[in-house]
Length: 640
Image (cartoon, rainbow, N blue to C red; front, top):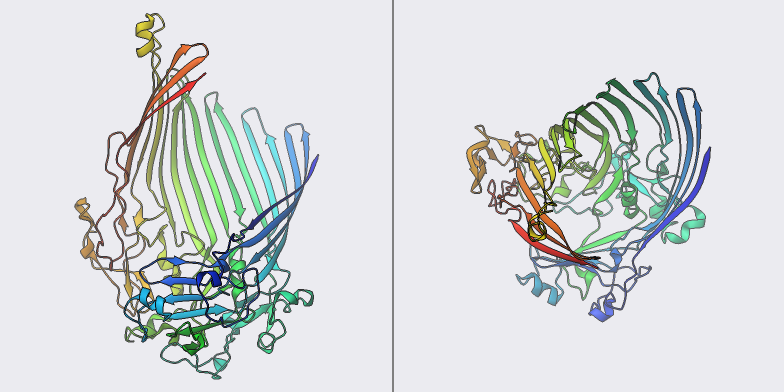
């Protein structure tokens, strides 16, 4: 029986040095809208300059001290052919983290739509003529906590001399992360009351006093803990208290999870073993979905002014709402999990060879997606002019983008994996080949926001809408070898020295190309899947000037989703051959010299990068870049 108690912590706190972050030093003398407090109340603003760089002020500085206390106790009982283990573990996690809101202001200098522009964004910046100015009332601080108890029991059972079984069951209580301040809020579509909806102008601004600008928002738990109210300047304001409380303290209900495991190994004979197993694995989501909600209204107010001058920010056009992007979580959210299984055969072969082939599967369920649930419907936008402001036609009036984490993603991986290696002799090598398929409707926990109304349309080779392609690589071969050449021990030193004892080694990597999703764009809603016009997608002789048939695709019209589907074109594959030659020369005891030459991409094979998959890009369907060409490097090491 063994018990351990451990405490670990990190402090991701970055303090800005010197005075380069000070707005007075940098010449930002304009008056802020709010008198915010915090570690950098006099910091420079975030600035975005059209066609130039974007830089952030100290408001983006992360303050995030973290501590984790962990207790574990394991009991092992060995009885005849059984080895039984039982264990308990309790984790207490503590993280205090700021929201990094734009409490020092955020300025965009852009000529688009700005009636005061000079026609050049840099000139606008010199004159102070901004396109958009936003500022948050303060930088909030969340004190995040969770406790996670877990336990398991397992039995390794030697059924016979040839057969063994592993059986196990794990339980975890996945407590949702919460803030002890209870200063979190979320948007709950079921609480949105159309009768209280605000009215919107054609420019996407709220008509003052036309409805409830907090419609649909709900505060966590019972509101701010009185002892923590000092962290929330407006904790007792009428605006805050007017928003109903009662959302789960951790944004969603905390579930308990049961995870069974089973495995076996059967020695068919002295040289052949069959193995298999199945396991259910739950995942505690990373903290960002909860952290993001810290900057939500009503606790953190913000103001936007458009088309004004920094000498008098409030003289610009006031946009009282919408509140920028709202981050929220589905109250019915459930932790994601994976079902993993495998079956393999291992066989010892002559000539010191070992061969293994496996079928491996992994099914991801309830994976995270982050769609915009306030996306206007295609029916709504079908016949609208391209100049229509999206915020004026959103279903939840008064808000712009509402990014909601939901547990609705899915993935399916099935693969044949083979492995051959030789571990003895003058020549040793290893070769591995995988033939697999990876299908799903999400590639990360922030993806799949193209059409939340039917996210299953994105199901296909696990995709990316960028030119980087997908995570679905069907065929991959990786091989390595080492050839220890004869030392010529029986020859004279004049021959043995320069010729004998060299070593040749190499790595070969061959893979098929990733899949791409062809996308287009419309003025409203932006990026979406393209239309498939018919005809072959793959060209007979693909090359840099045309990798796939660009004529087979066109941008979808504004009023519907594209017809082409996910993963409808394949990017170039890759061939890499790396070779190394080396030898160690014994100069005189104990002095040695090791000489080495490395050939990276030894045969100088051209490996093209993926073509553009965006129809509006001028290089659509063509390849504009390649991976590095051959490189040769020499090295010498003297040891004495």
